[in-house]
View 1 (cartoon, rainbow, N blue to C red):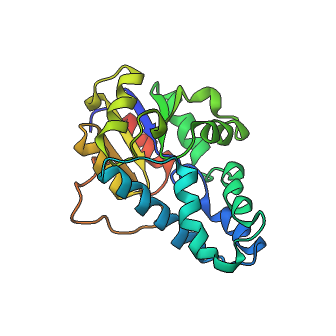
View 2 (cartoon, rainbow, N blue to C red):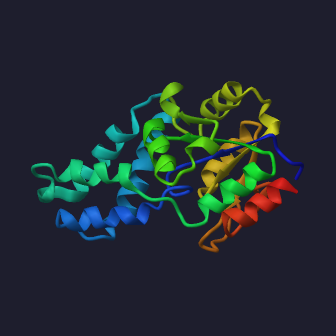
View 3 (cartoon, helix red, strand yellow):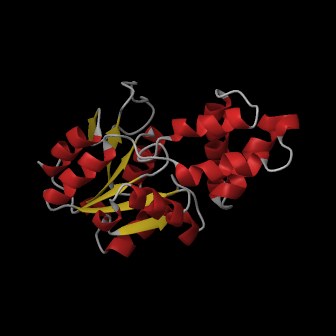
Length: 219
């Protein structure tokens, strides 16, 4: 693929290591495996709202998905204890070298998250990367979750580039597909070696880690 002008990163799971949040589940007495169920339910409900033309902030949707999973454990500050852990997550080990490679190669970098822009800024700041990222954009600025087209197109307008000159990088195939349907290019970060769903638009680029993907995007 031709070198894009701007690389836009998804944040949850793409940049942040969500697995660390499993510690919070265990702290409130819940099994660690509920993390995956909760996050999938959060995405389901946020995307369902977008499909129906509605919107709610990430934390509100995440809380609604967590309460039935915790059941009787959802007492006191248990729910907030889990959700507050999102603000303390680390980056995946391949993120810092990948972003630095992109910047060294002259590419602009931004983020687009279904979550909070402030949380993204803090995440990058803890890793010393905030100065390398031009803009942290949240779907709250549009009032629609990805993979609806509005967030992707809004991000391109904010960054001053036509959609075709931006690439969305994500670990989630549905996010890559959504970006491509909105006119952006899509790059799949496949850390797990999973097959890409046949029902979605094939990604324009893919790699097993971010430094490798950065090399593909910069070439």
